[in-house]
Picture 1 (cartoon, rainbow over the protein chains, first blue to last red):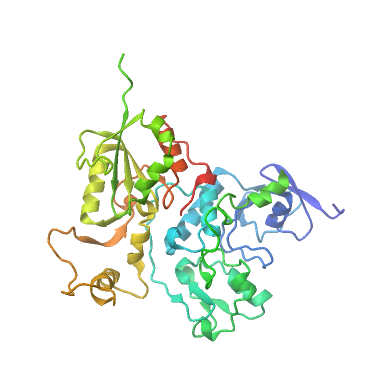
Picture 2 (picture 1 turned 30 degrees about the horizontal axis):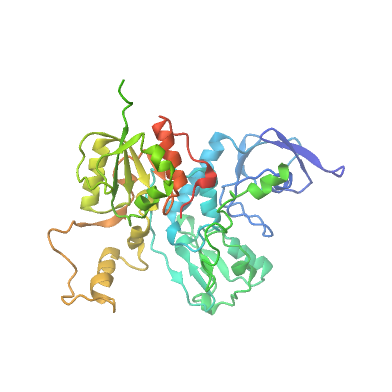
Length: 238
Length: 189
């Protein structure tokens, strides 16, 4: 701890932060997990999925983008916020076509794992929108199944900032906002299987698919078969 | 002294594959203890086609893909105190619901039937006609999750659900109070 470091609280627990750190960065370092979907280690923060919403000094903010401040009082795991996070994840399931039993990301999918963690196990009141969305299998090594896309934008940031390519981008507005590729189809971009955006575990769901490697991991050995998402961060605290 | 009344359980498979019914057997040895507290009413396991009396628990596998599924599901709601959607097909429509959003199609049901009975190179159907016998239950426009048709009280996720999560749910319900699942045993596949 340097003399510029300061403390604030998350759900009553004292957390140390360095100047410039976001609430989520400080929480991660302290072993407090704040659920998130659009945020990914090594990528710049976007604050669009709002699953990481916390109350900071009584106001709802995205923990991944909101800077920590000395003495700030943050609420995260309150029943109200947890219910709101669950609703957000539930709406993502209803807005796309997420059929877990046939998806090769099942067991490694962050959306699915978040549903487990937040307890999305009750009968729903929402309709399934069942949109008609394309699959782009034009690239020899990569397929895009946009039925499963949650528009988190992690591939966009990874392609721009890490790969320096800009293969992906947003198009449309509001509920019509979608991820698109910068070309006629994926085969007409400079996407490569070795890109961080493709192979780096950047896509949280089963939208960006590397061909010929699906279903390699048996059930029981996948990322979230035994461990709940976020437990790796929470273990730091124990 | 009379023995305490056993809970009556009815089960059915609608638009499902019977995998969830098979998963009931994954309860394994604990079935022996469970069956001391449970008896079956209508179920494919005993081949009873109609309710003999009101039931405590109704277990539904599969969603609704035709009008017969809807009638059976409504019959279960009328005759059961607690209705459980068992497995992803009952909860979300599951694999059969893939026909709802076949890519790039404005008429997914017709495209699905034509692929199955007319157009596919592997079809052995001399008449090249989509089955239309009046005895066949009419297909619905889409496959619906059970909760879109009747009120569902509890759902057990999984494809198929593990024996553990089915057992845990039944034990909690038989004890009179459902407290929720341990997130470690929740899976959607």
